[in-house]
Length: 263
Ligand SMILES: [Zn+2]
Image (cartoon, rainbow, N blue to C red; front, side):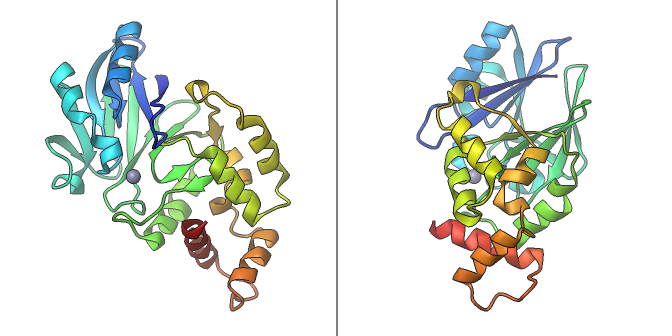
């Protein structure tokens, strides 16, 4: 499996992806908003884009579909419940569905509601797994829920699916928000030295060759995985004085999501 992370350099800071089979040169484009950049990369590499995968229905993820289909004839894949929100879905996906790219790549569909209610993430079947997580999980952050999502569902996705993936899983999010998100982590957990070191190292980074984290790293720098941290809980109590002595993780997650919205 060959992965190209494509930085769009747009105001929304989107990342697009191409996933290619090293044997056949067939490729799948994830959320190819900047279809021209994706096409240019495919051309340079000699790849054929045969499938488009939309992680969810938001326009900054689907806006390149029409032009990409016109240029390549690629089929559109998305969550089966996104049919009324995304035009011309050729294959509706549910949990556990496997997407094949060429002869060597297999990607498993995770049904991951929260950011929207028809959001999928893809998990590669590779020695070191890779997660293409759209707007569900970001480096050092979590998706917002104010355009068709539900925070409680997002928590369930984090606790029941994402947190159970192997620590070595590579994280490929839909946007480059790492710097801002690390500032939020440090706002919530000022003694998090891993987050501080990460902020120092990525603040000057070129998004064209962006740092790729793993789930193990996210567990250290992402507030939304640090729901039992004494500092996180103590700081949260400053904003929510009624917080129980030992709040459950769901409560902490939801309060953090609420604070992040206002931050
Ligand atoms: Zn979105």
